[in-house]
Amino acid sequence: QVQLQESGPGLVKPSQTLSLTCTVSGVSISSGTYYWSWLRQPAGKGLEWIGRMYPSGTTRSNPSLQSRVTISVDMSKNQFTMSLTSVTAADTAVYYCARERGAFDPWGQGTLVTVSS
Amino acid sequence: DIQMTQSPSSLSASVGDRVTISCRASQDISNSLAWYQEKPGQAPKLLLYAASRLESGVPFRFSGAGSGTAYTLTISSLQPEDFATYHCQQYYGTPTFGHGTKVEI
Image 1 (cartoon, each protein chain N blue to C red):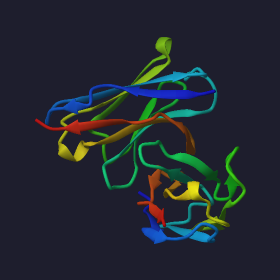
Image 2 (cartoon, chains in turn red, purple; image 1 turned 180 degrees about the vertical axis):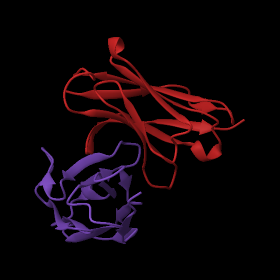
Image 3 (tube, rainbow over the protein chains, first blue to last red; image 1 turned 135 degrees about the vertical axis):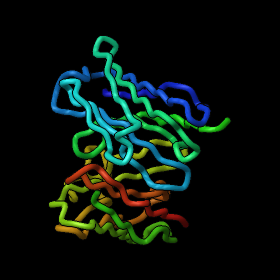
Image 4 (tube, rainbow over the protein chains, first blue to last red; image 1 turned 90 degrees about the vertical axis):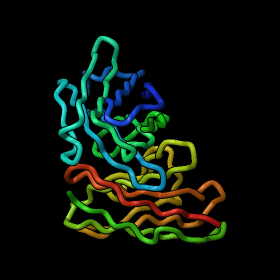
């Protein structure tokens, strides 16, 4: 079955760049009609969609984060990566990757990223 | 962005109760709505999509209804494993989520 796994540092300093990678197994991210997305959830707050990668490799980001977000892909490794620049404490959250077909399913287990000096 | 307003933010219920959670969109989302269940330390789990379509493997006690801007998630007979937080999400535009409803004893 399709599985996703996030990886990356759990602690990032303010003003630095947060980079996370999602490794997908069970399906090629370059095939099919699904998108591949990043989402996050700060503690005690709602879920926020960050951006997505299309099977073609093109990307789209949430307008609220667009100036700081880059999503890239490594088709050979079946991975896609999210980078968020100039982070602040407000970017502390659990970050998820997920397959998107309108709804999101499945999700990775999530990874907590804390922004602190 | 389309704003999603969920209510209530939390509710207390007992095993066997019928529970209904509401989600209202700031504009017509044409049934482009999903519901998720989230438990502590776990990723959200998709329950329903297209407002009323049950995801494979999800128990039939979960159902969804609504149209236009107003949608509901109903659990017909609450089970111990259903105590969790529920989120709605629209995918008519840029995806946005409600703030969640915590179902507790």
